[in-house]
Length: 162
Image 1: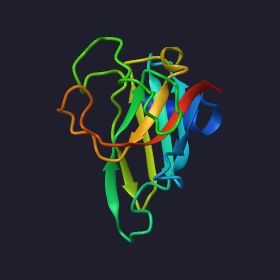
Image 2: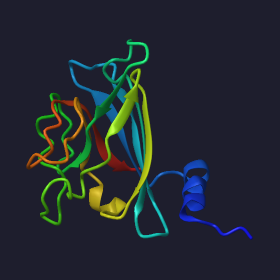
Image 3: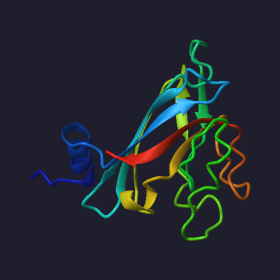
C-alpha cells in the first residue's frame, strides 16, 4: 500500500505551487555572467524546502569541470556590489559554524550550472525575508570560524516574498 512521504509533498510543492520567497542571484563584477534563483517553500512539516538553480558559475567553459561553491544566508539584504555589506551568516541561535541557520549545503557546479533542492528546519520563510543569499567562490570548509573560509562573494540576491 502506498504511504505518502515528505518527498511526495516536496515534489508537489515544486511542481504545483509558487514559492513563498525568492532570491534572484546576480554576479559580482568578476563574475557578471553568474545568475539564477533560490526559492523558498514553507512546508507542512515545519520547515522550508529550498530550491537553488544557478547559472554561469566559474569554469562554465571547461568541459567536464565541476567545483563546489559555498552558499549561505547572510544577515543583511544589501547586495550592493561587491557584496561587502551582507553582514555575517544568519545566526539567530548564536551557534558556532557550521550550525548557523544560514549555513546551507554547498552547490556542486558542473560546467557552470548547479541545481540543488534540500529541506531545512532551522528557519521559517518569515525569518529570512529581507536577508540575502550569497554564493562564494570556494566550498565552505565546515570548520573555520566564523564562516567557513569559503572565499570571495561572487553572487548575491535579496530574499523577497513572492
